[in-house]
Image (tube, rainbow, N blue to C red):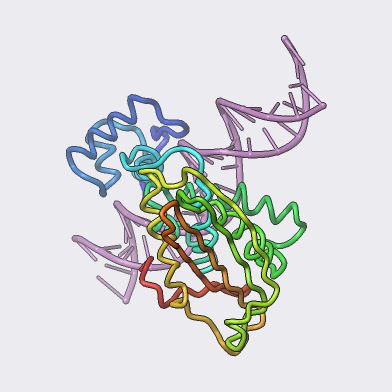
Length: 242
DNA sequence: AACTACCTCAACCGCGATAGC
DNA sequence: AGCTATCGCGGTTGAGGTAGT
């Protein structure tokens, strides 16, 4: 049973408490959180220590705004994992499950509320797939002279090459890939083999092909695809996040 | 400048899973 | 097998900051 005592301190951590916890972890490593707190005289529960370390003190944590590429990953991964924030956070280097959870609550749920629809409704999934995610994807463009995002609706196995109802959204972004972002970009660029994404051919009516292409100053051509449906975004055959 | 509304995010809680005795 | 301690997760809260009026 987690130790509950009147002596346990709650609320915001002081710099002194932080340094005590860091010192303790440097000596004994993570785990046995109650003991860690005790040996350096921290009047905090093990639970509180663990949370402070994972969400704030860990040296590899990223601070600041969730970038568009991180937002896109969160949306994609939420289709697959649902509210399993820690699972989603595993794929966002330097972000904690709390960061992901906070983003979802403050941004995504807010959008759903503004649209007067349930977060898990078909209507909101369509909004994510056809508006929000394409707009985020359009910001994922590496240094390039031109680029375009093509959204093809009403996909079926028979019209894969006919591309009806093509909308072209032009966009450009001069400085996308930074040192810190490169890892995330590597994840996104794996969509170039987007045909690997499995899907249910028996119900293809709302399947969508997201095709993102660009070329740089040297005329090197980039093409990234992924398939998605409003019902699900199944990435089962991708080993990217497994 | 003062007030209010909104936003962000750190921190808490409850609960289930797991490990160890 | 049953009990206790610990861990980890998801849901929620609220303090502090910021933007708008």
